[in-house]
Image: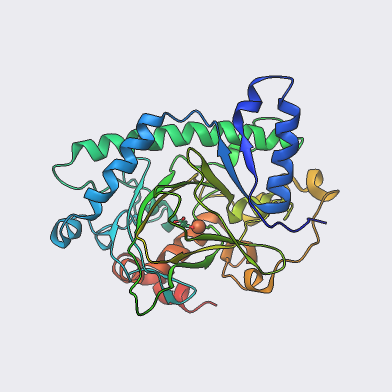
Length: 353
Ligand SMILES: O=C(O)CCC(=O)C(=O)O
Ligand SMILES: [Fe+2]
C-alpha cells in the first residue's frame, strides 16, 4: 500500500551517470513515482541559457497590450493554441485567475471530415507578431524538454523494472507547453484560485518550470490524507508529476496526484510542459499492455476524498480514446472554442457528468 507524503522528493538525475550511484537513483525514483506522484528533477542537463531566455521573455510577453494578445487569441484556434485571458478558463466549475499562451510541437493541420475529431487538436501555433525571438526560444525549449522527458521516461521504466523503451509507444508527436501568468491577487480577496484542484489531463508526464523567485509560492499537491503540501520553488529544478493516462497504464501504481495553484500577493510565472499521449490510445489498450506486470503490485490505497472527486474522463472510461477524453477536457475548459469549432459535440461533452 502506498504511503503518505509530507514533502516533495528531489531526484538528482546526475546519479544516473555512474553505475555506482544509479541503483540509488532508481530506488528514490521508485518511491517518488509510487508514493508521491510529484518530484523535483535536479541536474537535468537542460541548458541554463534556454531556461533563462524563456524566463526573461515572460514579463514583456504578458505586458503586451490586449489588442496584440487578442491577435493570437486561443478562441481563433481549433487546436486550442494561443492566448487566453484571465477568467476564460474554469477548473471544477470555478474561474481560474491566470492568463496563458499555449504552444505545442509545431504540426500542420491535417484534420478533415471523416478523421477522428481529436486529430484536430494537432495544428500550427499562433505566434505573436514581430517577436521572432520568442518563437526561437519556445521552439528550442520544447525541443529540449522533449529530450529530457524521453530520457526521464527510460529511467521511470527502469525504476518500474520494465525494459527501457516500454513507455514510448504511448507517446504522441505533439507535446504542449503553456506560458502562464498568475496576476497578484486583489487585497480584498487575498487568496484566489490560480488554477483549481485537478489531475493533469494534457499529458503522459508534466515537467513544470516555476519561473518566479523562491519567495513566490502557490503550487500545492494533495497528499493521501487530504492535506495540501507546498511545492515551493527550488532553483534549477523542474517539478515533475504524473498525468491521468499514466495512472491508467500503471493500474494505479503511479497515481496522477491532485494539485492546485493559489494566487497570493505576488504575481507568479510558470511554464508547464505536457509530454503528449497518442490520441488513438484506448482505455482497453492502456489497461491491457502492462496488466500482468502490474498485477502483483496493484495499489489498493484510497486517495483523499477531495482528489477522488476530481473530474477525469479517461480514468472513468467515459470515452473510449485518450484523444476524445482530451478534446472533451479542452472543450469544457474553453467553452468559447468548443462552441465555435466543435458545435456538434459541444452539448454532449458539457452535459455528460
Ligand atoms: O502553474 C503551476 O505551477 C501549475 C500549473 C498546472 O498545474 C497546470 O497548468 O496543469
Ligand atoms: Fe496541473
